[in-house]
Amino acid sequence: MTASTTADVSSARARRWATIALLSCVGLFFGLVSTSLTNNTVGIDFGVFHAGGDLIQTSGYSAAYDTDVFSSHFADQYFPSTADQASNTHFISTPTFGWAMQPIAAVPFDLALVLWLTVGALLLLPAVRLLGLPPWVVVALLISPAMAMNASLGQTGPYVLLLFVVLHREMSSGRLLRAGAVAGLLILKPPLALGYGVFWLVGGRRYLSALAVATSTGIMLSVATFAGGTSPWIGFLHSIRDRAETEGTWSQQSLSLPEFLKLLVPSSGSTTTVAFWILGLATAVGMAILAGRRWGGDAEMFSAAAVVATVVASPHLLVYDSFILIIPVAVAYRRGLLDPERVGLLAAIIATTVAFSPTLYDVQHELVGRGIGLEFPGLVCVVWLLLRWENESSGSEVVPARDMVAAS
Image (cartoon, rainbow, N blue to C red):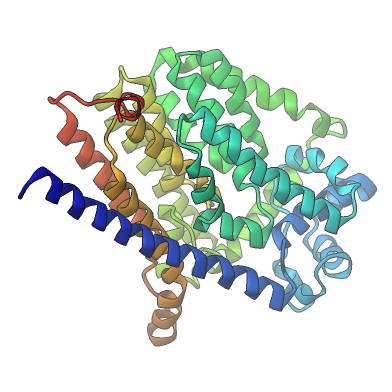
């Protein structure tokens, strides 16, 4: 087979994978948005944020973390369709997040939602630029499963992505104090701090400064929430406890291991849920040890592995926060490990598993009362492929992507 023929075959495969990914993404996007429009639940998660900020501003933290008060307020003022399931509506964001949402809650909900989603979409531009990826990646992210779910729920995905991109850049450049300061912002969404937190703990003394700065930053950002004592945080912990009782039924469309396991026992109580959280933490520790042995001296790869561990081991991380997986993909691209065929394959795996898993799970649940989700196995497959390609490149001269682009 000639080089020209090989290139043609590879190009044809790339187009095939890209087409599969595109169709899956478009189908999922319109499916989620149309369902949200039909049920009148567009931006329902943002509604929770907005309601939390509003209650904190008008009635204090105790009202926001009181399930009965919050769910009644949410159903009355935001989404009447939740009235029949109001007992399952909780404000589970940290007091720091609730405090930060107060000025946003001062804006009428509909306008605030439009601004929230618009600004989030625009943040993809600097995130992609900082990662050194081609501009077309912005379009790919806009039609990705992460954006589809983010748009239908009004979640924080693009904001989290930009934060992680800055954190990754500081970490890769060896600026650990700055990395710690950025990581401290994760007090807004603590489950997302798991990856870097565990990796820095396992990484030894060189990362103690980053941990110290991250902790200090988180505390400083939370000072305002302690003005009336520790009751806001106690209320937050009680809300988390209450949510854990029903968490097993909230785990579809997640790429994390704990959420994947909960699909197998959807009626389990808080004890099983916490056990899966602990298993996720142990998995992150194992990943940190292995990453330290393999890439301990390679800050960029170590950081990329921490991002993957965040997604794999987080106790609660749904598809809208999986935007951050573009970071390890960007590292692979920068190191010349990806070509159009490989990019298309990765996109097809993630898009199809996320798009079709809920339907397949519902079928399994109807038949046997439980099922296997495809999202986490899809992520494992993607990580395995990236590791395989990285292994293949070791020992051979790898042309960085920027040089490949310049040469072409």
